[in-house]
Image 1: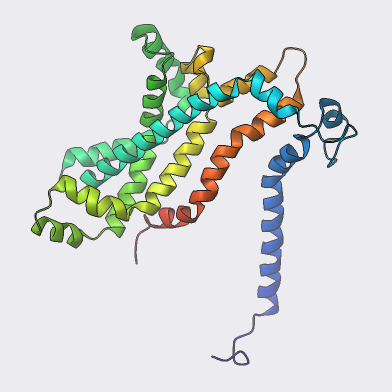
Image 2 (image 1 turned 180 degrees about the horizontal axis):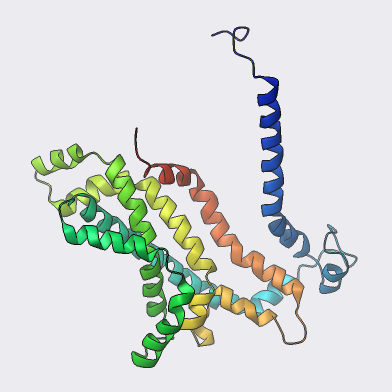
Length: 289
C-alpha cells in the first residue's frame, strides 16, 4: 500500500492518541521525579537542600564530600558486600529451584502431588508478609535460634519468592517449550536431568532474566525482613545501614541523598542490562492463540 492510499486516522483517534501520550508523559514525570531530586540534591550541602531543594546548584556550590562521608558513616563496603552476597545467592537459588520445580510440574500433569503443590504456591502469593513476620521471628529466633545469619536470610528470601518465580516458569515452559524437543533429546540418549539443562533451561533465558531482575531488586531493596533477621551491625545490608543517617533530633539529608544514590546504582545498572529481556519474559508465559 502506498503512502497516498494509506488510511488516515480519524480526528477523534488522533485526539485520544495525543491525550494518551500526554498522560503517559505526566505519569513518567511523577515516577521519575524522586530520582531526579536525589541526583539534583546529592551535590549540595544540608543547608542548600533545606532552603531550596529544587535548585540545580546550591549557594555553596557543588559538594563532593557527601559521598565519602556517607560511605564512612554507613560502612559502605561492608554493607554492600553483605547485600551483594544475599542478593546474588538468593536470586540464583530462586531461579534454579523455581525452574526445576516448574519443569517437573508441567511435564507431569497427572501427578496430583505436583498439582496440589502448585496450587499451594499460588495460594501463598496472596498472604501478606506482615501476617507471618511475628511467628517467623518467634519460631526461628526463639525456638531454633538461627537468626543473625546470612544463610537464614537467604533461605527466607528464597522461600518467599519461589512461588511467583515458579508460576512464571510454569507458564513459560507450558507455552514456549515444545515437548518434541525433549522427545528428540530422549531418543538421542539424553537423561531428564541433561535434557533440562541442555535443552529446556537455555530456552528460558527471557524468563530467567525477568525473574532475576524482579527478585534482585526485591532482595537488594528489602528492609523489613533483614531488619527482623539481622541484629549484628557487621551483617547489615544497605537498606538497614541507611538508618544511621536518621537521628532522634536531626537528620543529615545531604548524606542520605548520597547513600540513596550509592544504594540504587548497582541495581539500576542490572536493570538497564536486563531490561530488554523483561517484556519477552513476561509475555512468554501468556496463553498462545
